[in-house]
Each structure stands twice: as structure tokens, then as C-alpha cells.
Image (tube, rainbow, N blue to C red; front, side, top):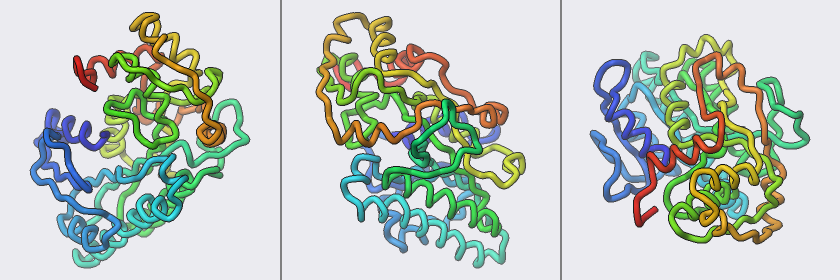
Length: 315
């Protein structure tokens, strides 16, 4: 989803004042997807695919490939293969390509990490000095990738940066297997005239940003002077901390009581256990000073979905 939105943004705005030649890689593509110079289907889990991509010597690589949190928790081996070993395959292919270029090729790599790299107990607001101690397989996989990207960058193989995304809300499309998916479901489904299930208490607090903001994070990270990071190449992205109850009230303000009435509480202990180990509030002064911006109230997030993604009569 974010890859498609990013490709649309690059096709529309170009790159650093000029046109952008975008190459998309995924296991499959939507029938009416974003424009691209090339579309390459395959899996980064295959070393040959990673080598093929590295040989193109792209200036900037946005690495968004992953399976989502709930699925990574349920399918342990698959989660590590897709979320960690595929990243290793890509980085190793880039290392070999740098050697082929006699050390001249060093791409900017922007990795989409997650706030799931943190685990409880949490301070009131998590700052950049808080340690990563994930409590889920997904978080462990993302944290491992951050460390590998740091090391490959230290060796001069890539110029990498990991951006820890908030939960992206409101996600377009249909519900998926992400443990955090309900944060979007309880907004998107009622706005589309469908019922939604709320598997956690409405007192649950979480950290959010819109897809629109997430694309802005990616573009900013790709053009950022990474010397300003002073070797600390993982960044907490800005966002909005709010409770589920505050989400619902924002939905009421934007769409009325009829939309709110479509939300049905249905506790799910498995989801509650995962979400309880996630952080819910951050001090993002560092990323703010570096030019990253996000919404400041949840109604703005809902309106971003209405403007960008709501299809009358659809999803």
C-alpha cells in the first residue's frame, strides 16, 4: 500500500527537481497500480531476485517488504524468512554489487521499520535514547534489520536509514492480518457503510500517522543529510498519541453517530496481548528537527483517508 502511494508521489513530483525513473518490485501488482518505468515480480527471499535488483544500481532503494505483525507472530518461520532474511539477501546483493563497481556504488537505502522494536515497560514518552527490546517476533525481526543496516552503512556498503513508522491509519482496502489492523478497521469500515469489530477496550492508547504522512517520511528520509544522524541511523517518526475512544469520537465528529454505531466490541485476548506490548507515546523532537511532520489530531487522519482513499460505493 505504501509502496504504491510512494510511486504515485514520485511520478507526480519527480525527484530532487527532475523526473524520477521508478522501478517497482513486489510479489504481485494491482491491475491499476502506480506508474513505473518497470515492474518486476518476485520475492526477495530468493537470492537471485535480490541480485537482479542490485545489478540495476538504483540511486535510492525504499525497502518496504514485510509480512504484517499478526501473521509474523502466527507463522514464526515465515516471519523471519520474509522480514529478516529477505533484507539480508538484499543487503548482501548490494555488497557484491559494490565490489563489482570497485567501491563506487553506494545507494541510499530507506528501511521501513516499526515502533514494534520497543517493548514494555515504557516511560510516559519514548525518546530516542530508549532501548529496543521487542516483545513480538515482528518487532524482533525489524530490530534485527535495523542493526544489520547500521553495520552495512558503517562499512560504507550502503547509506542506510531506518524509519520507525507509527501504526498507519487509516489504511485503505480490506482488513488484513496485522494485529494493529483494527485501528483502521473501526474507521474505514463504518465510513464505507460496513460493520467493524473492536477487539480491545476503548481505553487502549496508540501512536498513529496517516498513509499520506508515511509517504512524506519516506521521501524526507531519502533526501536527508544522514551525517546529521551522527551514526544513529534509526529514527522514531512523529505521530499522534490517542486512545481508541478518542478515535471513535473523532469519527463521530466527522461522520456522525450512524458511523459510530457500526462498531461492535468483541474482545480478542490474542490481539490484546500483542497490543499491550506496544508503545503508545513518543518524544520525537529529533525527527521533528530533521523535518519530519505528521498529523496533530485524529480528525486530520480521518480526513486524509476521505480525501485520498475513500471510493464512493467501494473501499
